[in-house]
Image (cartoon, rainbow over all chains, first blue to last red; front, side, top):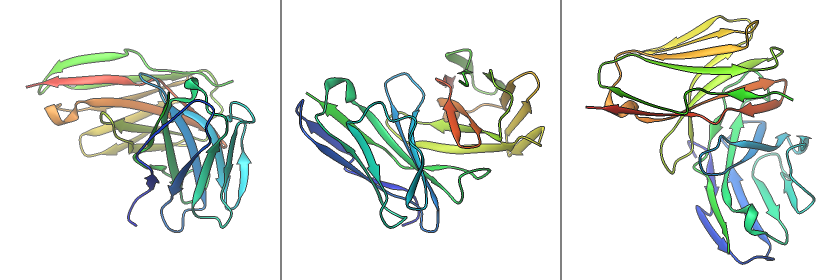
Length: 114
Length: 110
């Protein structure tokens, strides 16, 4: 596609459930980033991939959060045992390479944990 | 840890006025700085990317300056229009360490 896509656009789940959020980056972009954004705040960095490997996962809040990018394109952010505090908009971005290049963002997935 | 601050948090101007948006950061060892626009309920749109070796970047009515030594970047929007109403965010990149400010919410009134 022409831009970064994210699915689903909205996800409502119950506390304790497992969720997967998907990101499809721009074709040919080697770097992929995950952020989460709470209302009134700037995006908070979670993790970024260079190719298939997680180059920096220092932003993941705890071990309930995990992300993969097995073939160096599509990425999945996985959240186990969801908590109400996980409710936020999860944003994905990609860039040609990790540094010095413009980031392109997807529309986000709004996660609501009841 | 890098801290990025954007002041003011909100700004309202009449159409035609120039906009000046500020971004300050605590660690000057950045690789680049990027300005984004975010419309309500939407993702972010890149406006300008300034490399650490550059002092400014321009695109149409937008101009962004960067002063690494003082830890500041400024986004200027000339002759504002109602369509410029959005939240503007800056992000620093310190070799993969990425940090956003909280943004400045701008309203341009007709």
